[in-house]
Length: 101
Image 1 (tube, helix red, strand yellow):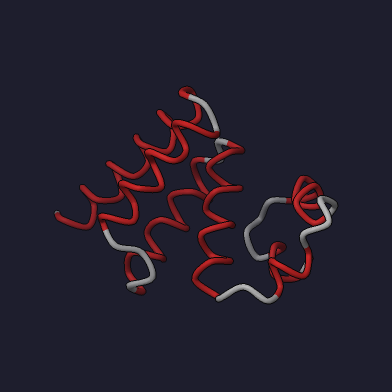
Image 2: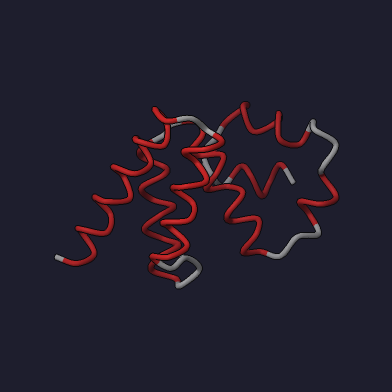
């Protein structure tokens, strides 16, 4: 589990996810669900650099659609709070603009 999350560049903060007693649910989840979890963690930290990399990579691979991205941003507004959702929204807009141009 730690190896999976270590790829995100989250550092020591990632241990709080594992300590919630949900390790089995995370390990046995589908790869796409784990990737969405990682996106949520990165967005909740407000880490623009990693969030940009994750958004871009997921969109390029087809793991994430524009509709999925919109849903994630709405979810973040509700659960991570407005300031962090603004950061994620701005990053998403930049990524989408770069991909179009």
